[in-house]
Length: 321
Ligand SMILES: [Zn+2]
Ligand SMILES: [Zn+2]
Image (tube, rainbow, N blue to C red):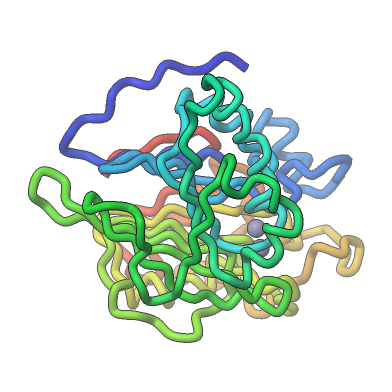
């Protein structure tokens, strides 16, 4: 895949590139005949493992799943100045080894390891797999929820916050990125995969942009993998009041679509009490593709009195803030 030339970022803006916007096994999932996967396949759509490129006072890679080499190549970006890992599930860190390409393209001794941040619990898992990268490709830093990350200099303040993502990822965090653009404060909140938050620090209030996991459209009867649904996210959006945009990522194929028999798919659970159109009282149709997700998200926000823009980015989509 050839690199797309990226125009320079205007000084007065931050730029977010949604490298990947999909779930742990991508969508369409391999061989899956469900309505979401077949609709996406028919439309040529694809969501790879969730990751974000932040271009502002620093260039930062947020999460690093197994699609990262293709994602960075497609985005036409180079070595990040820092890597933020949200948690210790494979779809968020298994691409770290591919970043060796940056070291291999330098002369011997000419590469500075990239600062890489994760919580101590997340490092336990990451280090088992990629301990050999430490000190060579990656400079290990421990992220402590509530404390600004150290070692990043003065250009930005980045603060991790604890997220609840179930017992298989006790090291899960999101990050608040704060800095100044042409003298104006800017704030981005990036959630990891999460079901809830053990506490909500005031820093989460009124970000310019909230990038949030939206694994399902409707909250399922059984929230087995501890993920966020659009339905459950609404109360967080209402409390935090992002001012410029809410961006929905990590979108999966796990909503049970009408006509799909219950129990036919391990990954699908029927909704507990589906989102309903206030005009008709009927459940909103479950979105299956990009256009349906964007339209559904806008309708749901409007129905709940949320008047900020909501964006369902495609892989590779860029927004400026
Ligand atoms: Zn994930
Ligand atoms: Zn996860």
